[in-house]
Length: 416
Image (cartoon, rainbow, N blue to C red; front, side, top):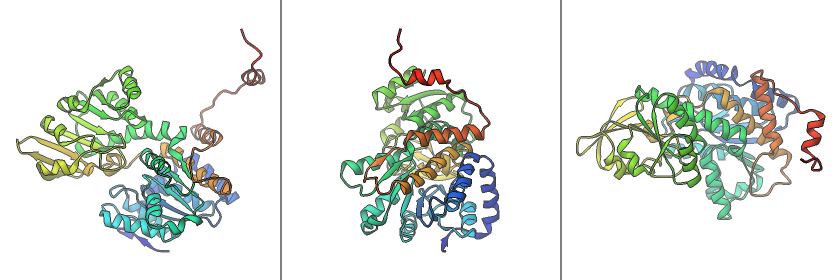
């Protein structure tokens, strides 16, 4: 096995981090226990491009317990936890991941994973999948399928389907209820605010907090900011989501207007250049910009750099001084603020996401002769299994239907 990491001496601390994560991911550990017995992934090569965090390490251990051979790299230049990467390497996992890599190094590491000739790919953002399709098409016939973790990656996959470019089956893990309604809403909501606070140390109460995008991630962020007593503004391009934001009690307006009012801006759209130079010129002196979308494109950073002078004033916080003397602060280089400036989602919520990932791999292997080169949602019974496991992990009891109720729900004869 080979590895490319920052410092192997960090491994012991990384193992403690993984141990802490496992203590809060008992639902995933139940799947691990079953995988150990049943070996559903025996001798399957899995290539992963995910955030290399303590939670991801628990997923890696679960897949290995199921018989898989795993190789992993990061999916964002600033999201790798170097101590966790070292711990995985010490355990014999092929890992190529460092915090703070260049774009060139990032793709070198992606290629290292591709060199292992994965039969299943696990992606967060679709870079591994797209790189295989663009530059390594000879591998595609041997690939069973893949699983995609996040909204941005799903958007890219559907674009591939539209262009008739997708050549192997992909499971949209993000589309499971126990993923996007938990990880995106609860996880992103908390961890994005966590990243902003760690990087800036500001008081949220009383600030005008602008959330761009009102999908599940944006809804979570807006709710948490409101809970910290911010005055929340939402910007949206989708009519129904804008309507939802309005009825949820938030002010809704175009970014052109919000730019003049906001103290803190958080982008969570999955699109590019949501905040542009014309918006930044209109902002207050001292405005703080952060992004929780997968790529660092939501804020036009090149546009900002062209019209300002930059200096770093805190870890993960850069000050940009415009020609008129106004200062704007960018957090985490415009990358995922919850991972660039904090530790990502809490372990408990990631347990559900990675239960879905584990079961997606099992689903792909079990159905490898039936699936076409399309984007699939995991069956509802898998989603329900994840929910049941999480309830059990939290020792929460739910009600059950009586025989009479079950019969009524499956019949049509009984009416008024």
